[in-house]
Image (cartoon, rainbow, N blue to C red):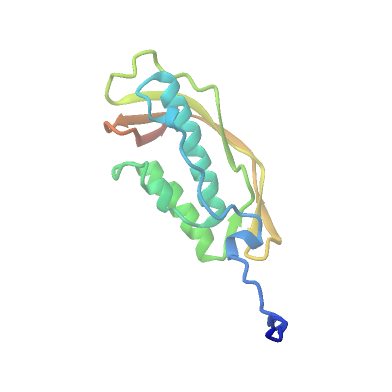
Length: 168
């Protein structure tokens, strides 16, 4: 005797919830650090600094400073200033477009064993739109560049930004 077959019920339509970060093109997760950024070498420091700037860019887009806090020392005043800018924008429901900052002319000293390890580089702020939570432009951050000294500390597991100072 064969059993009668019944069709599966039609699925009930449901709303798809898109995370807020994804709705305006902000990547949901921060950039990941490559293993080469964890080398105590001039090249490792260069890769780390580029990763740090990628984290700054992501934080400016997402309003989330937790990932940059993990690679910054507690005594870094310029780091605190950057974090304050990010949280200030987030408090106004604003964020930047992608690639706010880039690094140029990174010149790591040859001996990465010194502590602190000071790496000069030019921090370029690109002209970048300022956006609201819907992704609509509410302004633009102007382009600028500054020669900076990034002071890095080796922790045994990787690099930490302990100070950022402008060139005189």
